[in-house]
Image (cartoon, rainbow, N blue to C red; front, side, top):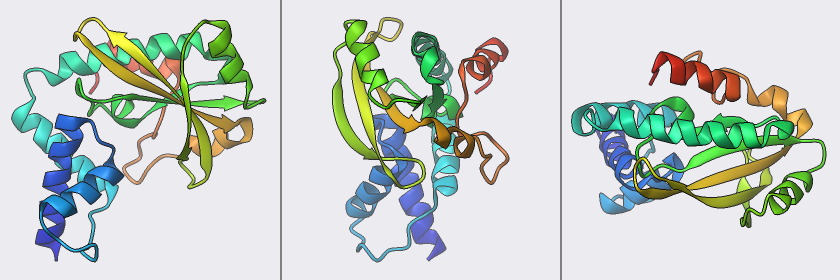
Amino acid sequence: MEYVKEEIAATAARLVVEEGLEYGPAKRRAVKQLGLTGRAGLPDNEQIERAVEEYIALFCADSQAVELRALRELALVWLQRLQRFRPHLGGAVWRGTATRHSDIYIQLFCDDPKAAEIALIDMGIRFEVSAVTGFQGEVVDALSVHARLPELAVHVGVHLMVYDFDDLRGALKSDTRGRKPRGDAAGLQVLLHDGSL
């Protein structure tokens, strides 16, 4: 059974790095690609993350640091632009496993959930609204923007998940490895300054 989980994790890691999939969809597609049934035991997100780190070290070591820095710099622009909504960066860009195929995920913690939409409209920024599962399993609005990343000559998705202000406290709890799952502009600037992956 553990071998099957490792196979799923390795296949999912490739999909995460090469196609920019999030962990959940990558696991499901990996199961399908490997011809397994839906009853196959799935690896947890930590196992996927370790597999992603290994994949990057093996196949993307020469390019990933440059791609990650460009994505983090673009994320910082958005964090600063939306400062009044207490933005926090999460996902692969925060964790240091992002590549040119990764999107940017920012959580906004708003007193008024519609204020972020109004702010984007006032800035003349076009966006699409969808409902997604939040970090606590609840449904939240996601405001998705297509942003140009000139350093890599690509467009990336910037997804702004809108949470209530009260959700901020729970958003900052460390994971099982003692790492913060997301960080604010000051935390991202530290990562950029230190060159941390």
